[in-house]
Image (cartoon, rainbow, N blue to C red; front, side, top):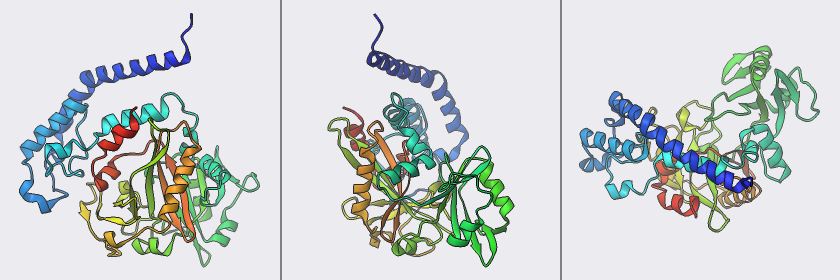
Length: 381
């Protein structure tokens, strides 16, 4: 008698877990010991919380605790200092979710059985079409490229030039259809007949070559709300709002989330490219006191380094609508368990930039504190 699809799925899930355990103990853990020994920044670096210097652990103790992370979870904790573990007690550390079990569980719930709905989020062109179809506002798509050819979104015919669109909109936002962490994104500007790509003079031939060397989508530039521009006008500053479908009640819930803000001359707000992330009070839309950089760009700050806006005094406009729209959008993706939404705020409300089924827990935990309680409540039955 053949096995049912449900039985096969359970067997596959069990075998996957066994495989992970075996590989982790035989290959991953030993290699992680080597990584820890070779990289002093994993146990000896400046603290994100110098105000608690008296509580700070010694490098040797941090080293031992990192060994414990490897033994327990299979990998060193690369976010040890971002989470403030160097000044936190054991009980405080226990409130955080290590990235390895989070990544495994997120992947199991979002991808193991049903991968079809995730394509709506993974492909930015498909995402924009789907969002428009359900009444969610997104940036207007003008062009998309495929197999080395640029197409006009409206006519669906090959387009030899984007200059007519530039003469109307003056700024166009270009991003890879399957890009992540802001990589490959660039902005094209037309001013007084001169073309600029990310602030550097260029020509149409170079722009078209760049847009057709891989799959790109070209959209109108989002005109963000004036108050959002006060934070950092050079970049579109987006909310990373996380929603999850509870396994116990089947309802969509909003998890601790962050606002990402660009810095310097950067046109993107991604923390992987120097941006700063700030926690959000989900009830009021006010930002929390501190913003956090990724380690290679800095530590933490309570004011924006360029605009001098004090984070805890800033309230995100239309925040209730942001939450309700994200919950509605997620409700139409029933096979995806959790989503990290990137949402800009336009003059008349939220504008959805993209959705990520492979969102990361690092930012929300760094800016809002440990999420083990939410992890247990919504990621398990």
